[in-house]
Image (cartoon, rainbow, N blue to C red):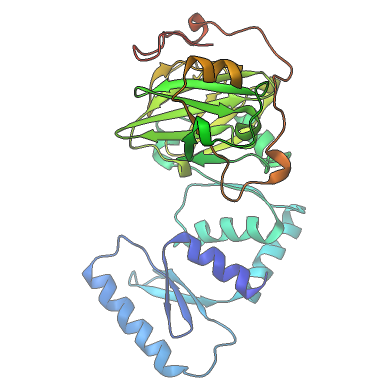
Length: 335
């Protein structure tokens, strides 16, 4: 593992502090006394070694036997050696992990490093959610960790929209998902939601989660609370053509067909069902002349933007009884 790659990983944890060439992994929950001790240790290390740091530049906190704040010095070579020893001992080419420890903890750090160094997948989970019984479904988790991680599909947070008369790249026969959300009509073209099948749409003080199952030809949408964010959601599998969303904040899987958990419960953070229609662009535009049209992400893969433009592997409509709910009053039905 190269130093630049490791440094990037450390920065992404949010607990790395860089001081004159040294990187310290610090607990965000430390109080004043721990912070004073850390400042003293940081100063002593910098005074000892002011030249260019070739080794031991990463300082990982450890209580040791004294119980006070201490740091063990590492670098890309020591961590790579540890990863190799782990990999050889367990006979693994690629390491995948479900982590519940913070990155400033040495075990939490090494779980992330092992995955990054071997090209594996790291899935963050919340221990209290697991302890409360909101555990991942192991068969789906195994699918996520040991098969194609569906890298081409992403979660799209707050998509951009333009007026119908200025929308480009849409033909009359192209299919769209349509919704009237917070009093405004919106169109989500098939060719644009294909690569971003999990959408979080914010309109003033209202938020909506839209899940599009492209190979089941089915969409569902629910109102969303303000406590749930795009970073909490990921697409982990498509068994039976149903998009499976993992909510790491609450440790729950969401079925993209029913909008429910595998136990048939309404997921935490999700509200009433919102109606989604499917029709050709010409038909939707005729019904809603003032509709807004979703634009693709700015960094979208152009190879995925135009497929498919019409229903693929259509399945019979899923009625409201299957979701055990009726849509919200602003959206009187579901397709």
